[in-house]
Length: 168
Image (cartoon, rainbow, N blue to C red):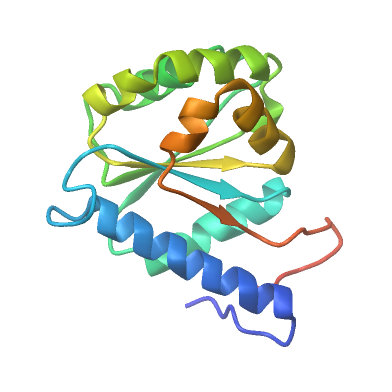
């Protein structure tokens, strides 16, 4: 098991956030959980792509469900169609989407996701975790407030520079 405890407060704080996110995923994915087999949206705000991957690795250890991952390409046009093309008819226990910060037409993707948000609930029966950075989170608030409000929660991880190691 990966050791997440060290002397840095940010690591301890991030560890607590990972545990809360894992608990939210587990509850949402459980047949008798708060989502009761329905779609739920969770936002994980982290500014470092490297740290996002570390968090996902640790999250998989804490979660009792299988978490599938989708990484968006820079040419992605809609979130919904990208997820459908990867999953097909499969319904994973939970899904994490990364790479929003690399999408070239991010404003259009966010707007289209907001317009199609009802389709997510019709098609998907699992918790969806979107990893976002602060810039993407601000764009969600500005361009897609309905989608942002639809998220059950936003889990914020400490700012992190490429030179630091959080000890995951």
